[in-house]
Length: 168
Image (cartoon, rainbow, N blue to C red):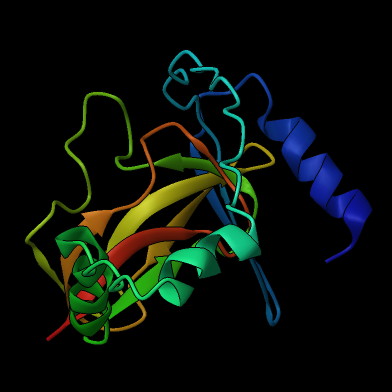
């Protein structure tokens, strides 16, 4: 599509009540969605924490050299292995571009999907607003929603995981 045509279409829609327009010209199709997304929540500023310092190598080797038994692994260290096994049956839905993540079509609407819900291929999962356009993100394969990885109204990056689903 010619950029000048696209600019003319967008300018013609400014100030109107039109929220969605599908334009078909020959083999070209343009689907434009306009609207006002819900206000983004107030940003929480994280306080940077200093990185933990590693113990010197010679100090770590000293107890082993003295004949002291190595400490037993903590139960918390076993959890990543269990989580990795559970994650083998899951997959993520990633953001196809940079934008703002919305779980529903409007602030008053319920989320497109909730944790525990089984989704079908092609089902709308969320909206990512990019350059004032609302883009529906659809499931590429069926699955059960295990976790929503992004907070509603948060900015997302290209390739950032949005949802974790379990294969069904």
